Amino acid sequence: MKDGVHPDYRAVVFQDVTSDFKFLTRSTLGSKETVKWEDGNEYPLIKIEISSASHPFYTGQHKVMDTSGRIDKFKRRYTK
Image (tube, rainbow, N blue to C red; front, side, top):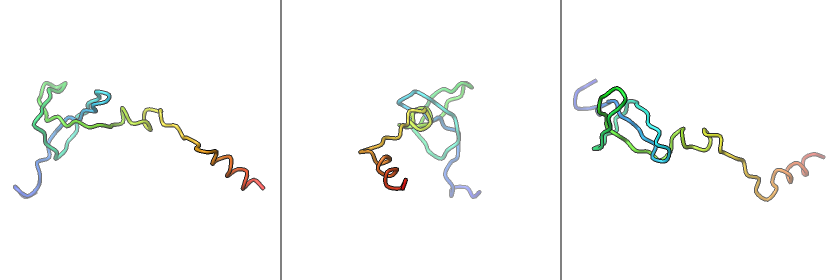
């Protein structure tokens, strides 16, 4: 890669602020905040609002809502 053309690709820590879940990965995002990771090194900290630890689909809290009996209407209409 050419120098000065591409953004700096480095290790960063993403933190889910709702569940306090953190994970270390590589990214071009930067931050003024840093955090000390389990390996003893300091990494930039990126705060996010949703991750697999707090998303309803991945945590099993996702529920299908049947508003106004749509499923029953469909079954009545097409069971003939």
